[in-house]
Image (cartoon, rainbow, N blue to C red; front, side, top):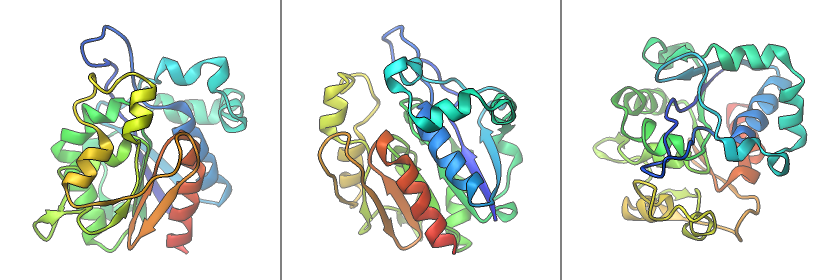
Length: 224
């Protein structure tokens, strides 16, 4: 089983002067869920090399057992430091693709033609696509048969109230919940910071960082 994980290369949090990137738990939890299931994992990003970790996700209170595992795992640290360039990967070489969130993808991957086409290629080849937290935002320009990929599908993602809680409603390019609804997605959510992952057909979406492992497990279930 070959899994592609796609991370952001974007590290500027809008015009706040603060840093962003991918959310550490949203990489670590799915990565180890896939690894422990025996998958071969390739990690890619638009610029290649070491992608930016959102500093907020790397604070002592942000740690989980799987981020701790990452901290003491030089092999996975090397994988992360040497991501391949997104324009060198092809959907035909993998069984599925997974996008971790963090705020970074809202700026680069959401608008990246290479990423958009990659997701369309996976989906059109009958392969599942997984995203969690802010990463469902990378779907907003993805079209299948001329329609938004999320149209008519049950989906989740980082909610308006969660964005409000982290006080970035006015900073992000768009709100994931509003955008998925605008595109015709049937948006579902649970209380802030609780676990929710949804599978609808070949599309898996998770609500927030806590949902990362669950979204990865949904994807593995689809693969089986």
